[in-house]
Each structure stands twice: as C-alpha cells, then as structure tokens.
Length: 105
Image (tube, rainbow, N blue to C red; front, side):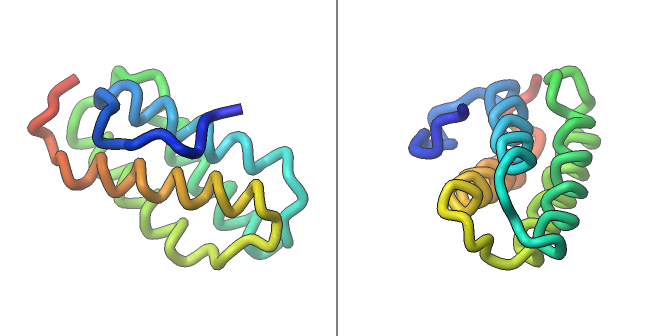
C-alpha cells in the first residue's frame, strides 16, 4: 500500500511517476461509486503509461496533466482510503507539472 503522507517535493521524477500509478492502482481495490471509479480508471490508465519511468519528458507532462484533470473532475470518493489515495495522487501529478522538464529522467 503506497504511503499517502509522503511529501512529493522529496521524490525524484521516477519516484513521482511510480507513486502516482501506485496510488491510483490502490483505488481499484476499494469500493467507489461507479461514476468516480470511471474517472479514476482513466487516470490510472494515463499513469500506467509513464509508471516505468522511461517515458520522455513530454509524455510525462502530458499524462500528468491528464491525470490532474481527471482527478480534479472525479469528485470526492466517499471511501476514506480512496479519498486519501486520490489526494496523494493529485499532489504527485501537480508536482510533476510544477517541475516541468527541469528534473530530467
């Protein structure tokens, strides 16, 4: 289970993308309403594209933006664990976007 209390600013780019995927993957095993679950599933798929840490900067940025958009529109899951994972994933996506391509691979 990924740690929901890690400060994204302390992670490398590779750790950010791996943690982003891990948090979204963790929501798949939790009871979440179907509408929110669809948004989270799309976000998880976008995060899976970059989870191995080998994607070019432009792809990481594009997928992080997609994840951010999807999570901001997913609503607030009623499940407390899911809510914590979504909050953590959103912070990770925002950190990736804030760094842009400056952090490199």
